[in-house]
Length: 429
Ligand code: NAP
Ligand code: HSE
Picture 1 (cartoon, rainbow, N blue to C red):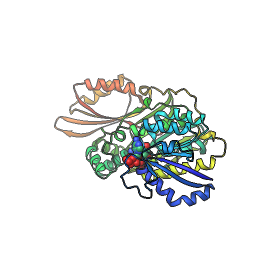
Picture 2 (cartoon, protein in one colour):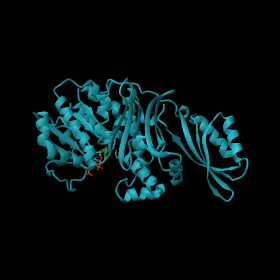
Picture 3 (cartoon, rainbow, N blue to C red):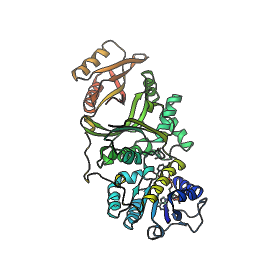
Picture 4 (cartoon, rainbow, N blue to C red):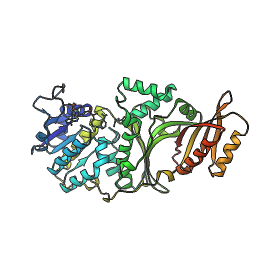
């Protein structure tokens, strides 16, 4: 059986998909008992060199793919939202199966795309959209189908992990490491999506929907980026036995579903603490299986193409069978509400600049005691003439209570500033 494929986009990921199909196409064909035929490839600029493709295959006209009855599978690796959404809806309504690597699209419009897929009896696979080469989507949907999933803790943005790792290894500040990461091509020229946690929030919205078995809106995910993490915070964290990571967390908490992305201090001996550079990792907790860890390359042409092409092969072998219910969307059509971020309990690290004189610790202790906020650790880190840097870690407290206490601390005339507030995660909940 010949399987016609159309490719939307031929950049970092698309080019690697083309390479895999060319180098291993025969083997894929043998294993799926089919013949894979890449018809057209949609790009913006026809003049760019595209190794391995003929000029006849390249096009700027999407209808050559979307209206071609010989194409059964459309692979979307062009990014963006509106055009991709429009093309994929059109493909699904034309009865074509879809593979996409687009996390922003799936996080924002996954429900609409799944509805179109179900309506038309098509597969919609998106393994590459979360953690690149790590096979987490199929794992959650299929391999862990026997479990109720309690939580996922993920390092799912390579750029921020590279920056935090470099800051930790070299004791350097955020701006210097970011500039270097951009110069070396690890960070985008416009790194906003990565640095401010949007990319991780898109991926978390997808993961959370699978963990909670409900539709989750990315707009409801609590999100804090890494731009305010300083070399001092990293050094203090190390002395206290912690490492700072941008964690994406989805868990069934005391007050309901929690989904949040924020810099987090995690114990230095925890397996996630040793995930460095652009690598990604996920810790998944299921009721039957217990804890599972996944580690690998979350970005890059070949690791991402590995996930895209595996989706394609799975679609091909399932094409003649009824739709695989586990791989579809089985969630209620209404969106789940998440626990209010200000009710979520966490331990917190605070770094304060204070007067260096008697009574400072007493005033701080009284204020926190009155607010029923308990201190776990308090250290005075640095003396400048008349000034002291205080670093403290609290016992679990709600974010609302923490903010109220911080507002009162800032009003004390013995306190110059509250410079950092970072959540501390011990993975006990
Ligand atoms: P990229 O290098 O920027 O490539 C995008 C490709 O799509 C280019 O070939 C571009 O054409 C084409 N394109 C973009 N908009 C188009 C339009 N409106 N019409 C026609 N062609 C258009 O992007 P990428 O890094 O490969 O990423 C692609 C997707 O994979 C994104 O959704 C991204 O989030 C996801 N993803 C990427 C990675 C990664 O490591 N890069 C990892 C996981 C997921 P030209 O070449 O002519 O400009
Ligand atoms: N910008 C993303 C990252 C690419 O840094 O992880 C993969 O989605």
